[in-house]
Image (cartoon, rainbow, N blue to C red):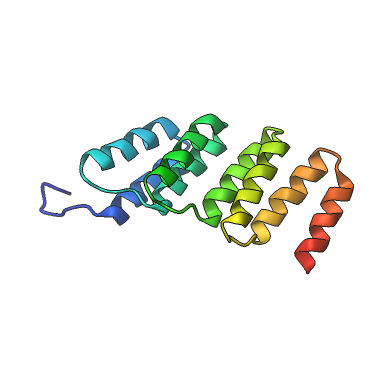
Length: 143
């Protein structure tokens, strides 16, 4: 692309990151994120969200949380997609307490839960045999 005179922009980099994420190549996605930064591109919440999602889907929650912290330190505001990815990743690994903390952080940041967030919570409660919590969550969602 560069040889043909096209200068990639943030959207182009995000598309490539998304492709790496879809094939589950979290190592290359992280390296590509760093390459973007080396080339002077500032990742935004969408960029971080793509990589965080890939890491969570590959069970690399510690790395995802590190990137989440980095996102905030660099002045980006996490969005609902990022919170949902992390909450889902935590729930999938049985880390309900940590997921609840992150959910509270999301609410404190004035980010409203969406149907995806509620579905993640309901699924996690059911898998942990916490049926009354699942029912309470459904009732809260309906309100």
